[in-house]
Length: 160
Picture (tube, helix red, strand yellow):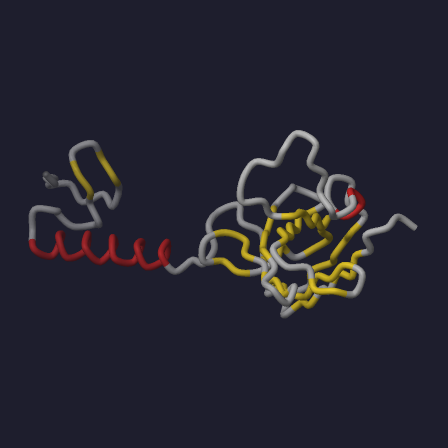
């Protein structure tokens, strides 16, 4: 219950005052206007707190010149460890998603990891057909810039 006869323009333990007594019609209108403005500011402020700037990021992954289907691709910022992810389709194409509705990769320098997607836990002796230099010990880097980005990765299955 909002009750106050004070008009100090602050939040108090007795109620909210927006420069007018809250018990009046004008005071309630002022409080409603204030709440609507705060909701609009918070709801339209864009990305969530702590989220990096992201930019549309897509491309194609191939291995030995052939499209690499059903693999996971992860971009992780070199500073701060922010992560965007995607998966390839039958043509090896991917598009990164940062989180929920936010599409794209984090702007800046990123370590890129590409691994095989498994539908079930692998057997104990399973080895990812994608060499470690592209995933666990990735040598892949991508510098995401503001605006659309395309990064194609042509992997080789043999060490050189």
